[in-house]
Image 1 (cartoon, rainbow, N blue to C red):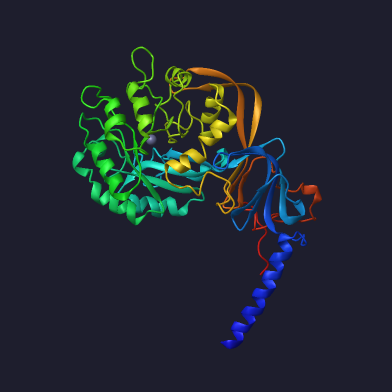
Image 2 (cartoon, rainbow, N blue to C red):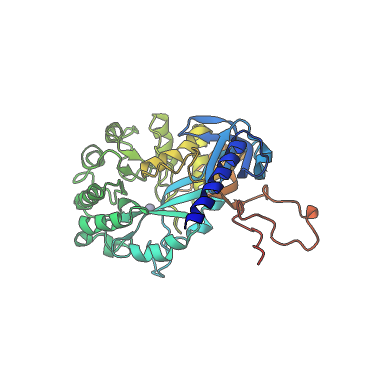
Length: 441
Ligand SMILES: [Zn+2]
């Protein structure tokens, strides 16, 4: 026992000296696993919009600086001319695809997350209420725990989850206590409560969702369902029923009087924003119209966050993916820095996961490298109406927890002619999540 202690003591001194040498730059060995060099970093949390190098070690952001010695990194990626952003955070998706249930968001209407996320620069998604407290464990076992994407969840206030009107209109299955208990039991994964699609005139679903959110100290996301301007007007939802920090999704749907008859943004929307209610895009297959979004943005009513509402009905429609919606906001006049903030730091804050959506030293190394193309492009809304644009974002590289998980043009890869005859996997497991070299037995 005593011998071990002495050995540990000697080792610590050695490590201490090594750290001193590393810090002084005397060592040129691999201090970092991965270095992304020369890209234009946009990090809203840290007010950075400038050319920076980003270094990663052990799955975390290790340094961000105007120049980091390339010799200090095991792998160097040239990102000159590209944008380097935190991994995108999409807080409205439906990814509970595993049950085999037809016409159900807890089933066939959902998609498998990894097929849609990394290729659009998304590293974190929040499922928006596909499961409720009765089937969350099943969702976690089959999707959340098996996906490479970081999957978080808003828990539906309906116990059975998002399985169609037969379930979603049943007030008796909306129970704040078990919903809150489930959320507290899974506080690393459940980041909010969702109410959606309710057809009736009562406030009960919203009240129950807010009660569950209050018990579990998490925000509520509202899809306000069928429009009932007499019995439950939008203005009352935003100015009375929701708490600051609760989220109104589908903000540009136009389905619930988001614009008034004169084409102005509903006064209740402004009132809600003043109170701290959050406004989220939630584009989906039925919730984004140019005739609503363009005038609202012109009147200064911008989104707090961009999200897809990804599901089988939206994935190939006006909505394509997260980048397509970011492009849409570029096309109606927002800046690149703005659309990146709305897709990274803002949504991370809304779901109270402030370790995400930024490139602070010590944060999980989720990094997205984007190319901004100039050209002639077009973007369609849910009614098939087109708006022309001149800019389009493409995802070149996605890094999750320090590992490259998507590389469109192989910018991290060696040319095959430079490799030995009979080459096999070319990467290193310290940075490569796609084809790391197998460990020698
Ligand atoms: Zn949805």
